[in-house]
Image (cartoon, rainbow, N blue to C red; front, side, top):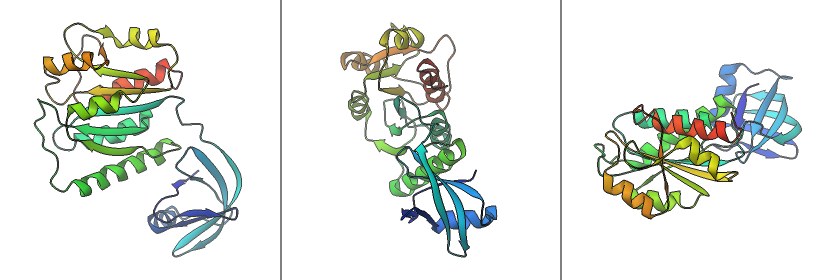
Length: 244
């Protein structure tokens, strides 16, 4: 069924979902007809199953016949924090991590970052948020992950520490396997995953991560690209927690 989020002015009132703005334009492209069923998600994990009752040039109205929790939402809250990469790799990370189940996605600057924070940050954030919304619709998510930027790795460490299990993905030195770390953690309500930019992390950054109480983890003998590592680690977490 076509899926819409309550964004851009779309609302629910009196048992009816009102789809407007860009979503109404999308509904027109889909050629929705009266009697068809759609899903309108509130963005907080609840799906309104609806039947289309009116199709107008500027809006679609749909009667809600059932409201249920979104089955696609993971049971663990996952925050992904990535060293800012070059070019459009950020777009790939946002899209794929949304599909894999991330709740929040942040980019931060670290020592080996080649890229700089975008001059027009608001424009870039809006773009990333649109990508997250489209990926959430495509994958049947119950929320749209929020996307943000952090000024430096210290902010990333502080954000990571807010979760029950903070993971620092590191390619060398003393660390545990991701598998062992996840198995020994038992059940956890939230997790954070830090991955580096092109070239990875500096040794002092890994040392600081350990001092801050983050779990230094290996993803095996292979070296992942910076846009692959967060998706691979997040997928491993989802599998380990029964969400895949």
